[in-house]
Length: 224
Image 1 (cartoon, rainbow, N blue to C red):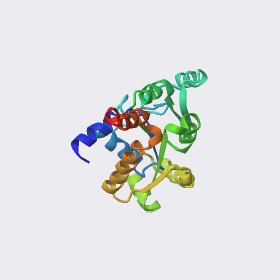
Image 2 (cartoon, rainbow, N blue to C red):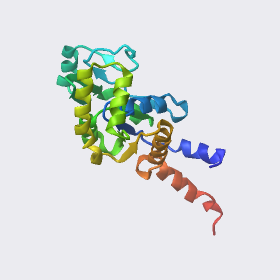
Image 3 (cartoon, rainbow, N blue to C red):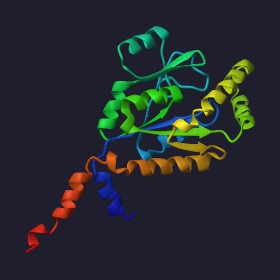
Image 4 (cartoon, rainbow, N blue to C red):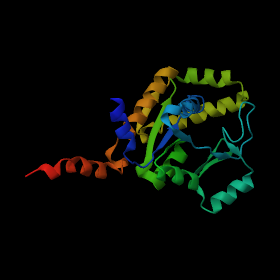
């Protein structure tokens, strides 16, 4: 695509999309989410969930999660201000709805790092805006190795995460795309390809009608 063609394509108005990544803990969804969100060329807004769980040593409040008390979480949920919420490993996670709808309406995209429960809820509320990707580990042995290498959970918690992983993996058929994360760069390239294709979908490009009308109107005055 020439530089001029790229500029024309970018000026056609469109509604933003929600790119959802899900996976069992340790399969790589958070790493991939951060990688593509930090790649400025893609212009993705990262959805920052709220959670009631304790902050891990490697996490930064406001970057990885907004850490709140259970009472505050329940209040948001009671006022129907959650786009999605879920209980995972005894903790609660959720996404406030208003910031998401504001971003989509402005024609920007958001990326979500949520589980299958949250994915179902977002799809139920904003089905036309959602693109879902499930990240699989290359093997259960590798998944265990990644969880142990992270050195952030007790042995008991790791066993609980592995057991839960088997339940989550069974939901893979609910997703639009599936990536096996046996190589991080290959997985990242696949994810970028999905995003590029989804941005070009006719149904998302709200300005195509006007653009085509302009094309067909070019030179009409010179016809006899």
